[in-house]
Image (cartoon, rainbow, N blue to C red; front, side):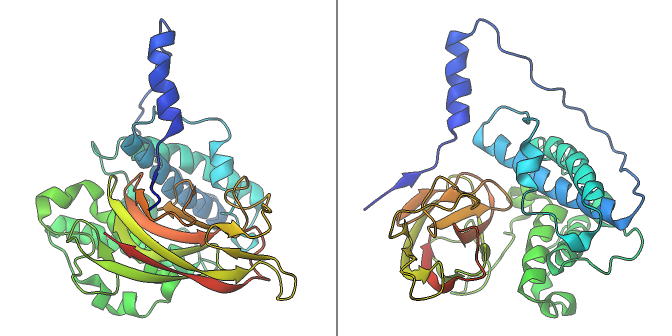
Length: 330
């Protein structure tokens, strides 16, 4: 049996540095500003919201992993690589606001367990017509509101039965699930007695803290970069995987195929989420955190807490065909 334990290399480097440096550089100042910026147009607001959400994910995961607090100058650019869509409007407006939101979100996310962020302030308001809002964003906004309402009432509503949730497509519901977590507050689990996904059945969303001995079978299409599993994992969870299938990375007949371990010819995809890994390999991420290789590994230790996504390591998905089947147990 093969095992993969994901370890943050940067944390090891920093830890080793304690013994070779006489003085460590000071940590960045931990500024907290309750003010929410104003926006000149919906493009700027969309960019700020996306950046805040992604930065908060990154900050919280760095905190969970024990990584030193701080951002490299280009971190927000790497995070935004797949974020911009021309339908949002002017790219410069979007990217500038994304950068500001990412920086603020990172600060809030890193300190998440002392304060729950300002999701309601940022996502609970509108600025002009948002006719180009994506289903995930709409769902995330509704999830924020539902989570905060439940938090104030110290309860857990069965929001999946609501008309709003049931009327949305899969992307809307995925956004709703993530928004509910952030709106309610991830550190409240131990005090309210209920998981984010109270579901003891054999299908549908699940939280690994609610019960052990469960499993879900997920289909990962090769034409989609990331597929939500609906499973909220928690840092340190030991997850078991049984993965199978073969996909075509180009139209059938070109012999450009991949199994879960990656391309059978050994090629890579320079603009894929993991450009140094084999093209077509099965990959994972948690929330909007950094991707990691899964391949044919059978066991991993979750590096962070959040919603688990599975995907295909490719940079051109429109000409792919086939899918992987993954059984996840905990």
